[in-house]
Length: 338
Figure 1: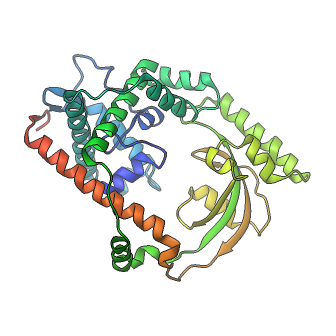
Figure 2: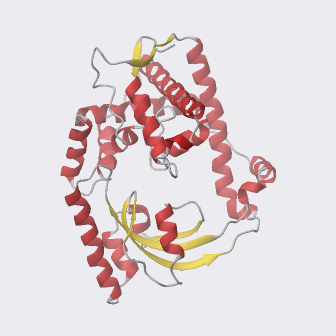
Figure 3: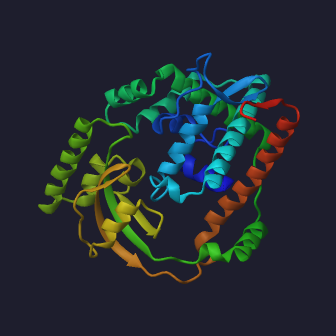
């Protein structure tokens, strides 16, 4: 579950901060900065005397559960499974703190310009600057708190890069992984779509949600009147990566997209454009470009780049685990609820 936890909570856009959480996730999922502590606050654990608040564990737990289908029905998830998840979150936060403390001991510093660039990326999740500021007020944190979280993430990342360096992956490694894990590379049914996103951040006001929906409806009316989808997507879509390609997401296998997005796309005929579709990211307009049946094994040539990343990631994780294991050996951990 530990690997699954990392991928679920982090998401592809976030930088790794010792494992489970990064500054963008702290902000966007409502996990408050540890800078805002009170003397009465209950700690889950103390790492060399530095406390990790229990509420931080709880907030990450809630954010993780919210991503699970039907997660509002907590009674479906056994209590022992919930307890194990909380334990894993706590352990990853310990790893995060240990890495940061060691990086500090080694004098690793990050330029303000890099922190500012990460802040701009975080703010880009919000359509308007005031939405970002409102979110900070809602969480009870300041811009300075968030900047400090970014700085810590970058410090840890720099430390790990210095310790691990490049991770070589040979063609033989790629071939061996492919042959030993072929079940991962069976084609599933896939859809080829393009879309426009009108982003609605978590915690947005009703006014902002209505504004995003009305903007999407206006654009949809233009598409119905014959305007070019790709050209409009480049101009207005707030999914920056796909917008550069006219909103084209390429073929994506079933189960990889937001359920609401996938359901709406599967109702379309090739070339057809959807109504406005709401997901946790905001409002989408979707055009179906094609379908592909699954069942065949992808060739090594098709997945070589993916396999290389998987092998590199696995080896890097093994090296990180060794570093953390040694840091734990030299450290003092005191669990407050033990």
